[in-house]
Image (cartoon, rainbow, N blue to C red; front, side, top):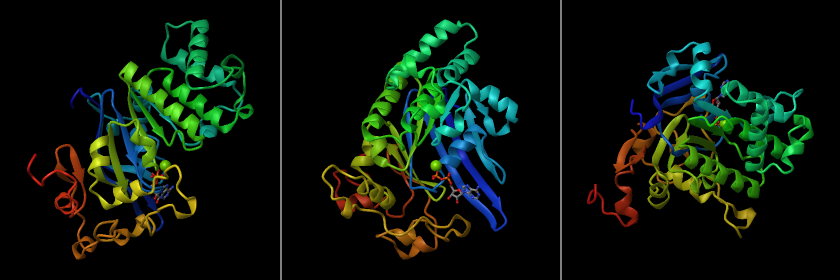
Length: 339
Ligand SMILES: Nc1ncnc2c1ncn2[C@@H]1O[C@H](COP(=O)(O)OP(=O)(O)O)[C@@H](O)[C@H]1O
Ligand SMILES: [Mg+2]
């Protein structure tokens, strides 16, 4: 385990065992989060992003469980720990922001107190007054107006957007080594979204914190991520540093996601979407899971699952065309010339 990496996921497979059979929601995922970097995990709804995050946090619920693989945090394999060990080991190092803030806030406690409690539990040396001061400070940083007043509000007295900002404050107040944010800004308007993403990036840079940001919207991660993983039907389809991924997109699925990012001035009636639907994970096709939606599909794609191959330095892609792509569309780099 390199100390340069906060978290290393190796060959992770997590499934649901249902009456109808095994649903391999995470199907052999490798993912690395370097210290101080922001990593994006992107893909359409249902492709296994939340399951990946929940596997790391030990939050998979019956009938779901980790089947194989390693999740290394500071050299320890989290998949080998008991629930209690996991909470002790994880609690101070990893924070998670969920999609649904209402389920993670205690409805009968004032929001300021909840965040203060989190801080007091993690930092035994801090006094109550100082903790309160820091909470109000982080409330202001995440864009909660009238922070002093909101400190004493109950969750139901706040709008959805404000509750989500409280969750973000709670996750960041202890300055974890790794913050996992699962669709943290999906419920917010675009101005607040941009503000929160910028804040995450600032906090990440200032504190050498790493972030795994999970989203279905490739546009969201473009500005703040260092590195992007694109996931489809439980597998990583493409992985590269953000500029490489946008400038030299190789996987047809990633191209589809890119084309689906709405741009200012677009007529909403003509927004591009990838035709077809995510396959049923109970009955995955034999070959490439994206084959039935792919414009470039070939015969072999329907019978064989392509491997994730290194198509260029730091650039991995799971597609038979990955190695041929650049020659075809002439994106500026000669095939093999600069490897
Ligand atoms: N309770 C469950 N029982 C069976 N399958 C489930 C359950 N929850 C999720 N899944 C399956 O796991 C897949 C991945 O889910 P999830 O990780 O939540 O997707 P994402 O976060 O990318 O939208 C889904 O496509 C679904 O088929
Ligand atoms: Mg999800």
